[in-house]
Image (cartoon, rainbow, N blue to C red; front, side):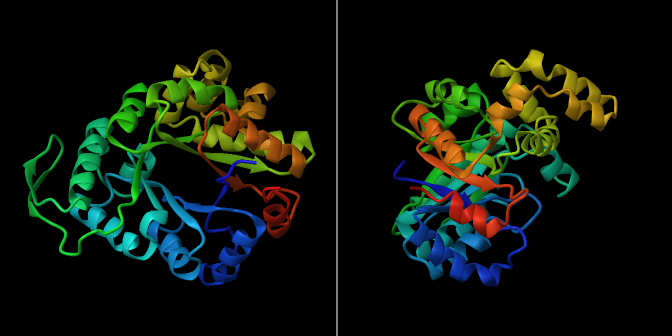
Length: 317
């Protein structure tokens, strides 16, 4: 098994205050990393701050902090503050997020996402290096900003990336890329764009049940919810799934959610959703590692199994 093996936090149905015992148990089970997200649950930083303080043996990652929803200075300060607690254990992913998250839920124009991501990455890197910044970037201007609490242990900065331009940027100006919603065979395609010497972290969705039809039913709902968002749709067109997914996209656009789910081929579900017995799921995760994923992070969908049983059952062997 890979030397890095992460899990997505916080766990559904478990309060943040109850995670303290879980963080220690995860290490004892063999998990090396906990990675948070920032969509519509907790913010991305709070669960990691608690983990950093409560369990010094864990590596910490955020996939991803949207570059639109915090000002550049506040984002740099937040990363710097967490790095005081976590030090070199911390990896922060920056990313454009998506139009629903940025525009519909936060009331911020989703304008020039690539340029915004590039500008925020450059600003954050320079701010964490202690530079005083007075510059007009393409998508914002910063005048006279300098962190008053120097960063002594630099966190790694990755980019959430889905297509060549962002993957190239991740390889050229960040420490690597964070991938999402990809199959094992897609890793090499993305790795070629990022570069062989950079980290690739990937969130992998796991439905740990031997009932393949149940797993595919759940997986279809997840796929239609995500891959109908434009950024993910274009990602999978680029990866070569345009023909396979066009019936889903057409049905979704027509407002027929049931038909959209039914139109997703089994082979697409089986490629994008890890399912089966615990052993089969671990073997599938290992195939991602063998293909070039540096930090696999499982996101458990506990259907037909208790969350605790899934966490224990999916732990590395």
